[in-house]
Length: 231
Image (cartoon, rainbow, N blue to C red):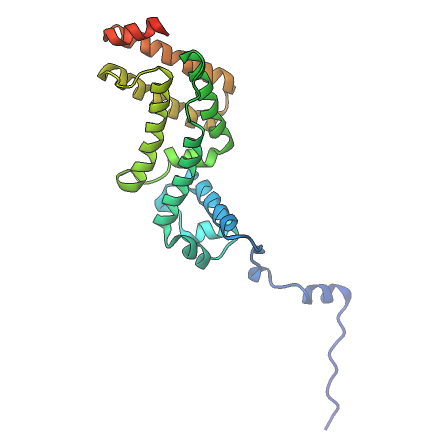
Protein backbone atom coordinates (compact mmCIF):
# COMPACT_ATOMS: atom_id res chain seq x y z
CA UNK A 1 0.00 0.00 0.00
CA UNK A 2 1.19 3.53 -0.65
CA UNK A 3 1.84 5.97 2.14
CA UNK A 4 -1.12 7.97 3.42
CA UNK A 5 -0.95 11.42 1.83
CA UNK A 6 -0.06 14.17 4.26
CA UNK A 7 -2.41 17.15 4.46
CA UNK A 8 -1.30 20.19 2.55
CA UNK A 9 0.17 23.00 4.63
CA UNK A 10 -1.99 26.05 5.18
CA UNK A 11 -0.50 29.45 4.68
CA UNK A 12 -1.17 32.16 7.28
CA UNK A 13 -4.30 33.44 5.53
CA UNK A 14 -5.78 29.95 5.27
CA UNK A 15 -5.01 29.25 8.94
CA UNK A 16 -6.78 32.44 9.99
CA UNK A 17 -9.83 31.59 7.91
CA UNK A 18 -9.95 28.02 9.16
CA UNK A 19 -10.15 29.21 12.74
CA UNK A 20 -13.05 31.59 12.10
CA UNK A 21 -16.67 30.39 12.40
CA UNK A 22 -18.92 30.69 9.40
CA UNK A 23 -20.45 34.17 9.31
CA UNK A 24 -23.93 32.69 8.95
CA UNK A 25 -23.45 30.82 12.24
CA UNK A 26 -22.46 33.88 14.25
CA UNK A 27 -25.00 35.20 16.76
CA UNK A 28 -24.84 38.16 19.14
CA UNK A 29 -22.80 37.21 22.18
CA UNK A 30 -24.99 36.69 25.21
CA UNK A 31 -23.95 38.06 28.56
CA UNK A 32 -24.75 36.63 31.95
CA UNK A 33 -27.20 39.06 33.50
CA UNK A 34 -29.41 39.04 36.55
CA UNK A 35 -33.05 38.15 36.05
CA UNK A 36 -34.17 41.75 36.58
CA UNK A 37 -31.49 43.17 34.29
CA UNK A 38 -32.26 40.73 31.47
CA UNK A 39 -35.97 41.49 31.79
CA UNK A 40 -35.24 45.23 31.62
CA UNK A 41 -33.20 44.75 28.46
CA UNK A 42 -35.99 42.79 26.80
CA UNK A 43 -38.51 45.49 27.74
CA UNK A 44 -36.21 48.23 26.45
CA UNK A 45 -35.80 46.41 23.14
CA UNK A 46 -39.56 45.89 22.89
CA UNK A 47 -40.31 49.55 23.63
CA UNK A 48 -37.90 50.67 20.92
CA UNK A 49 -39.65 48.43 18.38
CA UNK A 50 -43.18 49.26 19.53
CA UNK A 51 -42.38 52.99 19.29
CA UNK A 52 -41.64 52.63 15.57
CA UNK A 53 -44.03 49.89 14.45
CA UNK A 54 -47.55 48.74 15.23
CA UNK A 55 -47.61 45.94 17.76
CA UNK A 56 -49.08 43.60 15.15
CA UNK A 57 -45.96 44.08 13.02
CA UNK A 58 -43.46 43.25 15.78
CA UNK A 59 -42.66 39.60 16.42
CA UNK A 60 -41.05 37.82 19.33
CA UNK A 61 -38.14 37.07 17.00
CA UNK A 62 -37.72 40.80 16.34
CA UNK A 63 -37.50 41.53 20.06
CA UNK A 64 -35.10 38.63 20.68
CA UNK A 65 -32.81 39.75 17.86
CA UNK A 66 -32.83 43.36 19.01
CA UNK A 67 -31.99 42.34 22.60
CA UNK A 68 -29.37 39.76 21.61
CA UNK A 69 -31.43 37.03 23.30
CA UNK A 70 -33.04 33.80 22.23
CA UNK A 71 -36.67 33.46 21.26
CA UNK A 72 -37.11 30.91 24.04
CA UNK A 73 -35.82 33.40 26.60
CA UNK A 74 -38.41 36.01 25.63
CA UNK A 75 -41.16 33.40 26.03
CA UNK A 76 -39.64 32.34 29.35
CA UNK A 77 -39.95 35.84 30.79
CA UNK A 78 -43.22 36.97 29.23
CA UNK A 79 -45.16 33.98 27.88
CA UNK A 80 -46.05 35.66 24.59
CA UNK A 81 -46.14 38.90 22.64
CA UNK A 82 -49.27 40.27 24.31
CA UNK A 83 -47.75 39.80 27.76
CA UNK A 84 -44.53 41.45 26.58
CA UNK A 85 -46.44 44.35 25.05
CA UNK A 86 -48.42 44.95 28.24
CA UNK A 87 -45.27 44.70 30.40
CA UNK A 88 -43.42 47.17 28.16
CA UNK A 89 -46.23 49.74 28.22
CA UNK A 90 -46.71 49.33 31.96
CA UNK A 91 -43.00 49.91 32.53
CA UNK A 92 -43.14 53.18 30.58
CA UNK A 93 -46.36 54.25 32.32
CA UNK A 94 -44.98 53.55 35.80
CA UNK A 95 -41.87 55.62 35.08
CA UNK A 96 -43.91 58.55 33.77
CA UNK A 97 -46.43 58.43 36.60
CA UNK A 98 -43.59 58.43 39.14
CA UNK A 99 -42.59 61.85 37.83
CA UNK A 100 -46.07 63.31 38.04
CA UNK A 101 -46.48 63.40 41.80
CA UNK A 102 -47.76 66.87 42.76
CA UNK A 103 -45.25 69.15 44.49
CA UNK A 104 -47.36 71.87 46.04
CA UNK A 105 -46.01 75.05 47.54
CA UNK A 106 -46.00 77.67 44.79
CA UNK A 107 -48.44 79.45 42.56
CA UNK A 108 -50.56 77.15 40.35
CA UNK A 109 -48.92 78.51 37.19
CA UNK A 110 -45.45 77.84 38.60
CA UNK A 111 -46.44 74.33 39.65
CA UNK A 112 -47.86 73.72 36.19
CA UNK A 113 -44.55 74.78 34.64
CA UNK A 114 -42.67 72.43 36.99
CA UNK A 115 -45.02 69.58 36.09
CA UNK A 116 -44.44 70.21 32.38
CA UNK A 117 -40.67 70.10 32.93
CA UNK A 118 -40.92 66.73 34.65
CA UNK A 119 -43.24 65.45 31.93
CA UNK A 120 -40.85 66.46 29.15
CA UNK A 121 -37.87 65.15 31.11
CA UNK A 122 -39.51 61.77 30.69
CA UNK A 123 -40.33 62.41 27.02
CA UNK A 124 -36.68 63.23 26.32
CA UNK A 125 -35.04 60.55 28.48
CA UNK A 126 -37.46 57.75 27.55
CA UNK A 127 -38.45 58.65 24.01
CA UNK A 128 -39.14 55.06 22.96
CA UNK A 129 -41.32 54.39 26.00
CA UNK A 130 -43.31 57.59 25.53
CA UNK A 131 -43.87 56.97 21.83
CA UNK A 132 -44.83 53.33 22.40
CA UNK A 133 -47.22 54.31 25.15
CA UNK A 134 -49.13 56.87 23.10
CA UNK A 135 -48.58 55.87 19.48
CA UNK A 136 -48.00 52.12 19.36
CA UNK A 137 -50.50 49.34 19.75
CA UNK A 138 -53.78 48.32 18.18
CA UNK A 139 -56.48 50.78 17.24
CA UNK A 140 -58.76 49.24 19.87
CA UNK A 141 -57.31 50.26 23.22
CA UNK A 142 -59.82 48.39 25.33
CA UNK A 143 -58.85 46.13 28.20
CA UNK A 144 -55.54 46.23 30.02
CA UNK A 145 -53.73 48.32 27.42
CA UNK A 146 -56.44 50.96 27.50
CA UNK A 147 -56.27 51.01 31.29
CA UNK A 148 -52.53 51.65 31.20
CA UNK A 149 -52.82 54.58 28.79
CA UNK A 150 -55.83 56.06 30.57
CA UNK A 151 -54.05 55.66 33.90
CA UNK A 152 -51.30 58.02 32.75
CA UNK A 153 -53.87 60.56 31.59
CA UNK A 154 -55.73 60.30 34.89
CA UNK A 155 -52.48 60.88 36.79
CA UNK A 156 -51.77 64.03 34.79
CA UNK A 157 -55.38 65.17 35.22
CA UNK A 158 -55.16 64.71 39.00
CA UNK A 159 -51.85 66.54 39.08
CA UNK A 160 -53.38 69.57 37.39
CA UNK A 161 -56.43 69.43 39.67
CA UNK A 162 -54.17 69.36 42.69
CA UNK A 163 -52.18 72.31 41.43
CA UNK A 164 -55.39 74.27 40.82
CA UNK A 165 -56.70 73.37 44.31
CA UNK A 166 -59.85 71.85 42.78
CA UNK A 167 -61.40 68.60 44.00
CA UNK A 168 -64.58 68.36 41.89
CA UNK A 169 -64.26 70.05 38.49
CA UNK A 170 -67.28 71.35 36.64
CA UNK A 171 -68.05 69.84 33.22
CA UNK A 172 -66.55 72.90 31.50
CA UNK A 173 -63.31 72.68 33.47
CA UNK A 174 -63.08 68.90 33.06
CA UNK A 175 -63.45 69.13 29.27
CA UNK A 176 -60.96 72.01 29.13
CA UNK A 177 -58.29 70.14 31.10
CA UNK A 178 -58.70 66.90 29.18
CA UNK A 179 -58.47 68.78 25.89
CA UNK A 180 -55.23 70.38 27.07
CA UNK A 181 -53.79 67.02 28.12
CA UNK A 182 -54.45 65.71 24.61
CA UNK A 183 -52.57 68.73 23.27
CA UNK A 184 -49.61 67.99 25.55
CA UNK A 185 -49.46 64.37 24.36
CA UNK A 186 -49.60 65.43 20.71
CA UNK A 187 -46.94 68.08 21.30
CA UNK A 188 -44.67 65.48 22.89
CA UNK A 189 -44.95 63.14 19.91
CA UNK A 190 -44.46 65.99 17.44
CA UNK A 191 -41.41 67.25 19.32
CA UNK A 192 -39.82 63.80 19.29
CA UNK A 193 -40.41 63.55 15.56
CA UNK A 194 -39.13 66.99 14.55
CA UNK A 195 -37.19 68.58 17.46
CA UNK A 196 -37.31 71.90 15.66
CA UNK A 197 -38.45 73.82 18.73
CA UNK A 198 -36.38 74.05 21.90
CA UNK A 199 -37.88 72.44 24.98
CA UNK A 200 -38.20 75.56 27.19
CA UNK A 201 -40.12 77.35 24.43
CA UNK A 202 -42.41 74.35 23.95
CA UNK A 203 -43.09 74.13 27.68
CA UNK A 204 -43.88 77.86 27.89
CA UNK A 205 -46.15 77.55 24.84
CA UNK A 206 -48.13 74.73 26.44
CA UNK A 207 -48.33 76.57 29.75
CA UNK A 208 -49.69 79.68 28.07
CA UNK A 209 -52.15 77.56 26.10
CA UNK A 210 -53.47 76.24 29.40
CA UNK A 211 -53.95 79.77 30.73
CA UNK A 212 -55.73 80.76 27.51
CA UNK A 213 -58.02 77.73 27.58
CA UNK A 214 -58.97 78.31 31.20
CA UNK A 215 -59.62 81.96 30.34
CA UNK A 216 -62.07 80.92 27.63
CA UNK A 217 -63.68 78.38 29.97
CA UNK A 218 -64.22 81.17 32.50
CA UNK A 219 -66.61 82.83 30.05
CA UNK A 220 -68.80 79.73 30.25
CA UNK A 221 -68.52 78.82 33.92
CA UNK A 222 -68.67 81.22 36.91
CA UNK A 223 -66.75 78.72 39.06
CA UNK A 224 -63.86 78.71 36.62
CA UNK A 225 -64.00 82.52 36.47
CA UNK A 226 -63.63 82.69 40.26
CA UNK A 227 -60.77 80.21 40.01
CA UNK A 228 -58.87 82.44 37.58
CA UNK A 229 -59.27 85.44 39.92
CA UNK A 230 -57.83 83.54 42.87
CA UNK A 231 -54.83 82.14 40.93
